[in-house]
Image 1 (cartoon, rainbow, N blue to C red):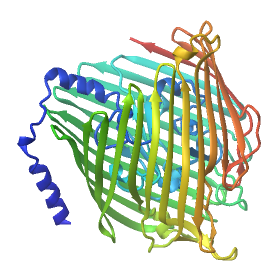
Image 2: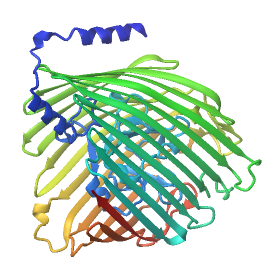
Image 3: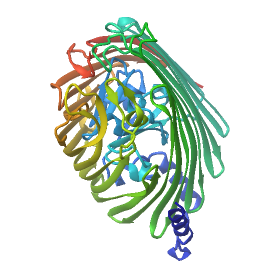
Image 4: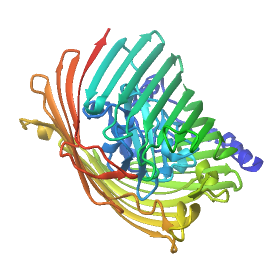
Length: 613
């Protein structure tokens, strides 16, 4: 362990002064800070403009988010192209995400750059302690992300960026709907001198759209930013608790399943600027609890109770010189679990990150990798490289190659019941992917198309040789995925003559996946997307009246095709907004995940009041 660390330190110290580092003036530094607020940070260690990223990166802005018929952050993700949103139940209470032929365990969730994944199981990773009122934007990186984040970003990563505000404001919203659905959301921001604080709260409850699908959900989030003379410091805290009837979640034989899971998230970070470098540092802690009953009214029949604690610290350096931009970082992370079903376990991991970006106009080239240490395997190196070429204003081509890995969850390693058996000898999953794409952003239209080839090895699956055997976690599968992802957005300059349409976006995804199971039956084989078509249409405002339609057509490898149409009608007058929302307008019958039919048509109505001082 000492040799890689020593080599890293020597590399940083030996960067020569003779490189003629570019010293930024105060004015340039201010421009740099302003630029940083507008960049996509998910695609690399250093801040990078989306137009320069050699990866497929999507950004969902606050403007887009406010027009969607959703009340939680989790629900937003079903409108993201290339993301397989598998919902058990309703209203984002229990959701699994996957992308590019991957599984729900292979997607990394972050809040302001901090890892939120549950080390017990990926089923709980989308219990996000952030209110919808908090979200400034969501950045989605598709494809391997270990070069930037270390383990578990095997098929992609989602970074939820919360907002800050320079104003004092207060907002309150109420929503009521069918099946006894109701929610109350409130938030405020306070700004005074160097201090800025944003707080939000949400409480939801529902009687359920069928037997044992009721739920209660409570969440809050607080974000404090302190502006310093040469940087800033940020502090955040979030909590989320969901209790819900889990009809048919894990077995059709027990319709009275019930679950409650909660998460407490704490983090602090800072960024300091100097003439030619930036230093970021942070520390975070995530505490999770999960209780599961196979029979809701008989806890003694079968009960799982899990508590997990994970956290870490990280530091990143960004150095600007005549040779380009060099970024380096170090991460420490620990994960612990205390469970009546899994036992008591802990593990510690660490990683050294290094990237270098250089511009030879019109080419931007980036190369980097992570040297990561994890239990039982020592230090392993995971490289990546990408390049983008600008043909002119708004038009770029890009290509990338990246490798990634994922550590098994504690459930995959140690879980045991009469029909499932974990495997403590599991090896990390690994993948490699090559991607190429073309993007254009203009006033008339914007589009992006990418193609990729992805090969995953040592894939962890729950398998068995015959139906009479229990499921067992094994490194049994290999997956090769070929895919294409396309999106088209019509600009407002093109639509300004339209009487009705203000914004129109269309996305299409197609994947071809082959999986080697070697004769095994598989629980999660080919459960992801085969193809997907999304459209989002937003109308112009007619005396404050607007409507939006959001269509989702998709087909998974193991299910029939589905088309779901959602809508939102709103009327805004000054600081008051009245709205009606509906999901599944066509009342389509389908199964999204598990053994429970998805909800049919569901109508909500509500209001939102916002004041700024």
